[in-house]
Structures are given as C-alpha cells and as structure tokens.
Length: 238
Image (cartoon, rainbow, N blue to C red; front, side, top):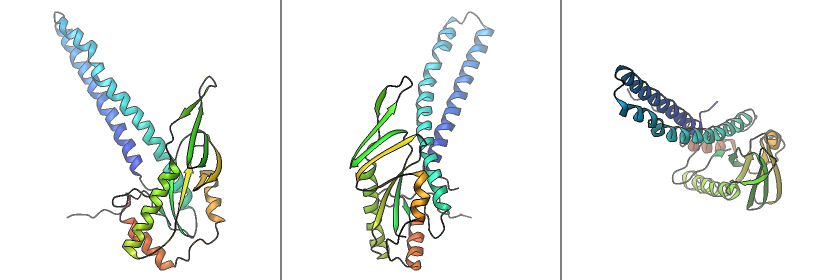
C-alpha cells in the first residue's frame, strides 16, 4: 500500500500530540517535585495550575488536524486499494505536478479526487451541498467546497502536462470519489463523474474504450507522472 502525503501529515500531527503531551507531563512533574521539596514556594502552585493552558490548546488543534488528515488518508488508501486490484490499468498515486495539483490514474486517463465526507451530498451542475445529521436528529450544513471544479482544474493541468512533456494529446476524465460508508449521493446534471467507492471497481471493469492510447503511450505517461508521485523511488546518496 503506498504512503500518501495525507497519511504522512496525519502522522506528523500525531507525533506533535505525543511530544506536547510529554512536555506537559514533564513540566507538571518538575513543578510537583519542586513543590514537594519546598512548600513555601507558593508561586509554583500558580505556575503548575496554569501550565496546562500553555500546551492544551496546541494539543487540541493538533488533534483536530490529525482527525481531518487521517480521514482523508483513509479515503485515498481505500481508493488506491480498489484501483490496484484492477487488471489492465496502470495506477500512479498521490501526484503533484509542477505548479498544479493533480492525481493521475491511467481505458483513458483519469484524475480521481477523493473525498471522505459523510452525510447527504447533493450535486447539481457545479453546485454542491453537504447535509449532516446531528446526534439529536437535527440537520445542518457541512463544508464541502467544490470538488467538481477542483477535479476539472486538475484534469486540465494533467492534460496540459502530458501535451507539453510527452506530446500526447489525451482527454483527461475527472472523477470525484466518495469513500465514507455514511455518504449518500444525489447527483443531477453532473459535469464530472461522481461515484461512491463501492461502485468504483465495477465502473472501471465495465468501462468502454475511451481513448486510443497505445501500450507504449500508457507506459510513457506512467513513467513521466511517477516522477511527481509522493511514492516515487528516492535517490540514495552514498
């Protein structure tokens, strides 16, 4: 399983939580020992009381960011697992092209934007709405941005990249894939392909030929795009 940038970022915030928690415990421990040695140091009581407030806000922020990045990483990993199980397809994961962001997965060339939102996702044209249900049954709007415009920008960037780098003119298909089991999709008048991960494998297996790409072109595309993958082989310096 490839390691994604989102997973690396989630691990970074996890490590920061651990570090700040250790710092908090160490500071509290030192202050406690000083107070035990000399009860007259009343000022240390106030320092010990307020020390957690120096660390806890950071820990909370890091925890929230860790949860967000972990959810994104889980979605990307699930999509990668599905795509890697397909026969007759070449997959390049977690690609950031120079100057643009695009993830390429090449019966045609496809850019897949992975989303791990849960709730009711309504998509019409290029308008998006996310509705979530709270613990008490109340429905409220969530943040979702505009995945269709995002994936179309990435598709245009990849098409331009392939044309300039390899001289290959290929239409790049944009796909928005939702990976959360609790995501429900309502799609009308789509401008890109919107699909749930449970249907992703069957989508590609039943896909008709989209582009007349030769095997050589597919290999060239994969080799060039892999240079910008987070999982590309790193050079070893002796």
